[in-house]
Every structure is written in C-alpha cells, then in structure tokens.
Image 1: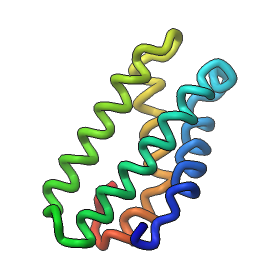
Image 2 (image 1 turned 30 degrees about the vertical axis):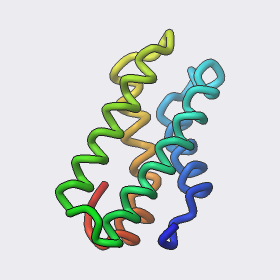
Image 3 (image 1 turned 45 degrees about the horizontal axis):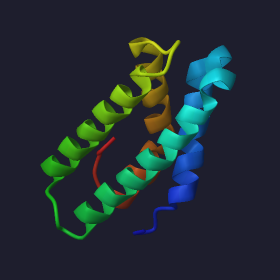
Image 4 (image 1 turned 90 degrees about the horizontal axis):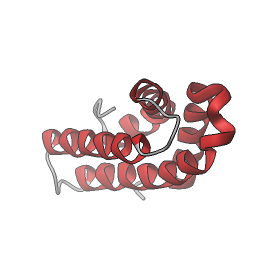
Length: 110
C-alpha cells in the first residue's frame, strides 16, 4: 500500500508497545497485538488517501487523532491498564513507525 508494509508497521508498533508496557506485557499482549494490526492498517490507509490526494493534510491529521482516541478507548476496557500506560504505549508505538509513515506521506503526520 503506497510503499508502506502494513505487516512491518504492525510489528514495529508492537515493539513500541511492548517496551512501554513493561512487566504488564504478558497479561495485555493479546490486546495490544490485535490493536496494533488495526492501527497499522488504518495508518497505512490514511497515508494512502493523502498520497492519492483524496484527503487534505489537515484531514489526515484529524483521522490520526481519531484513531489514537479509538485505540485508547478500546484498551481502557482492559483490566489493569491505566490511561497513562495506554498513552505511553501509543506514543511508543507511533514513534516506532513515525519515519516510515512520514516519509511515505511527505509531511509530519505522526
């Protein structure tokens, strides 16, 4: 998808999550791995839409923010996860794919 390897994005996001979650990883791994696949696919789709000129830069940023909010909402339902842990994990996951997405799209989306 526009030179973006969704499987690699997902793996990179999981690596970021794992480092941020630390000792809680074994208990929450299943949730984070599932959400990483969804997040990777959605980021790639947003990038593709922007590259194709179907959405504006502003709309791409809005869609990313929506995905971040959605991610947080889903994981807040997992027992033992706090808002801070989820935000740290999300930031680490996005940092892990920032270069790939921003390079593909041509501006600082993440």
